Length: 526
Image 1 (cartoon, rainbow, N blue to C red):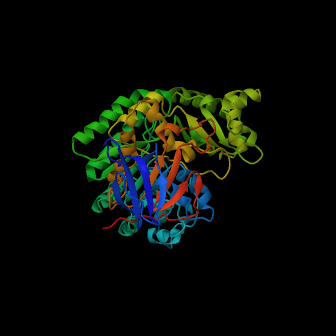
Image 2: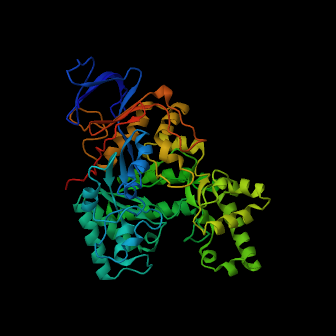
Image 3: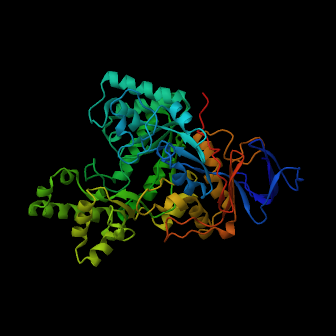
């Protein structure tokens, strides 16, 4: 069905000011952009008066490759579509749902315990399996953690020469099948175990295919496990490591979710941005992405040391153990600048739904316990599997600075939870960026550019991200005056996203879903 968008304000995905124009869509492509186009018989006409016609929003960091190859994928992906997102970069943080050795006995570990959905496959099998089942487009990266798991499981040992050759073969196969690059997850098992030589080799292969390397760094806070307490902030040391890998290989780098966890890390913003700027000035291609919330999804064990988790129940209850643990957690919270009042419980388990949406401290006050005792109770009740939303990732001033910075693009880093409270990013991230654009008095064309053309350029996604004649018709139409996000209800659909078009198909119109599945896995041409 051909579509004519009439009377809209067209933002083309560059930083240019908008123009009043119509947009004709024919055979999945943008056919014509001009004022006062005449209606052709049989066209579906959408009156966009008072609305913004934008390229479809591109989510620079997603994990939805683990959620689309299952029977209930529509339920998991619909909230992202309703945000106006038409394309997502997937396979981040070292984990991809593809990029395996078929006969590996370790493939059940893929996802690192964070993500589960469907059977891991090769990238081409993933493309074939999802054909005709995607609400939106996916741009695949291959995860280093996935390739390491498939040859060595979750083991911390250095890869043998044979394992290293297998890992390289798996990586090259995924790149030859259309992956746009790869990702590292240096805070997660098994990525955290990889020696620098292995990481550099992985990055060099990505460079060989002119791919991009996204990196979840080893630290997002002033202090983190794996570093000595003395010395410069760990978040800065983590960026130094990423820059070293980039300089050793020349690979293009996307620093994943630049966050500053804990109030004590906020003073590092200037130094971090200076490091990015210096690398750019030296000729390296590096940028970062961010989300618009002051919190992020985490697990209840986030401030628990490994030694405690390894103890049996009897040893955990020993007075000396509890005294030692209380001391360590108190120091850790102090150094991070995080309190139990910053931990919002999103899931504990069946029968404990009444805890959801409350902070650990609020629950403690209600049950007349200390924050420490309530925290341990929640760990025990959930067997360490409870989920939280951890606050103090940013403050509004940091979000504004990062949104304004020329190196940033935007993302969700969220996924649909089958139980418990949802992460606001699943439903609200991109409309919230629009809302903050208005609050901070930023140019709308700059925000749209970061959501669309800038992200397409950074990841080398062809023929998308801009409203240009001959480009694929991925389009989001929104009423800027009506954009509204209710952060108090994180699973509520934002207002103002009027129509969403993907590959020329009208997917959302006035909140009504068409029932179509026109999305594709976009494969990079070699």
